Image 1 (tube, protein in one colour):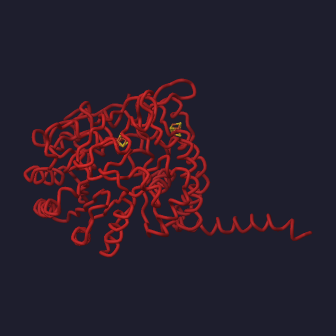
Image 2 (cartoon, protein in one colour):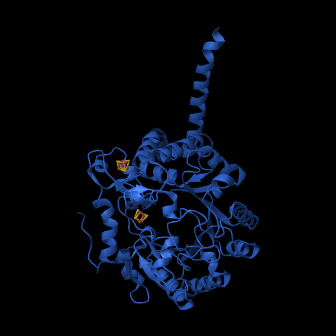
Image 3 (cartoon, helix red, strand yellow):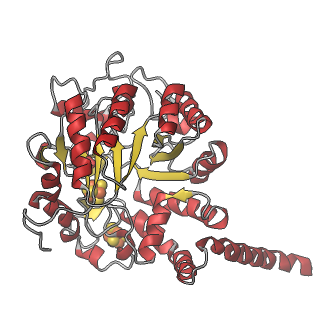
Length: 441
Ligand code: SF4
Ligand code: SF4
């Protein structure tokens, strides 16, 4: 077991905290959403971050960071349900507590359906980076991303994206991969790149962990079963338990095939033009640099989540009573982040790595993935292997050569994008070899 520093050591220089000002409350009812059920943790709550708490949150967040770059990250549920005035006040508090020379950036993850001209103008004026959830072309997106009435959301999301573009707002796409889109990698990728003009793509594989008896879609709440006229959710609480997945979940093999297919397109024409988070993370790991991703780092614990009432949890994926660290109204945020419990949480990622991963040739890139997905047995029967292992292994093995090439280019102070020329030459050579026999006849 790795040694965890005691409570009284220095807090981390920087950390990331996702604030959820509306808690789990959302205007949509996406079938695979793991967070809607967290509403049941706060019975009777109004699910709105109070102004006093907002002030305290911004003050503590800025005060706890020991670097000059601070990121204020909003998420939900649907954070835009708080209304514009809430975010205007958050900017006022940021200006109030900002230290000289400090750069504060704001990110917001939204389903995009509530964006109008006023919001888009606000995001532009305050340099928000807006993450929009979109799962691909209409049919793939609307398969699971529906509103409380079960109505599709595609048109509203695309309208929101258009408004962001019109106002010059920086945005990226968060794409969840599931049964409806996992077998269509190029269709998804080309739609985002060519039809929507998206240049930053984050891929999230849907792995809905459940007990064996709950693998059907109804277990996670299929459309039409929930009330259509409230923001509430009657889903059973989601926890990190069970050793099966819902039918909607992507398989490890599908995930690997999806990544490889879009990588093959990207490496031929989009390097340095389109940013796919996992490709950047992989390159950083091949270069021996910090990957910037908790999932693909040896340890984690520096990406926490805060509920609407100030409760801080170890991670967005572990908003469960046993991972509640405390409330920032009672204990300073810096103490919660630096607590032995949180450090233990982060080091457990490494300490619980099965031997199979420790011996793995691509461990340096994968690090066993996120602990939330480590619930299957290794081939030799050890628990704690990542459900997505086969996909990770296929992808990381597949990209070994191009990653080495890009690493070498970077070491020589050349642009990794030069790899596209190499691929073009190799493809031309291969095509010529294919044509050659017939021209001899
Ligand atoms: S549990 Fe997973 S998502 Fe959470 S901080 Fe660790 S690696 Fe990241
Ligand atoms: S690819 Fe599989 S075996 Fe290798 S580190 Fe990742 S999860 Fe472990």
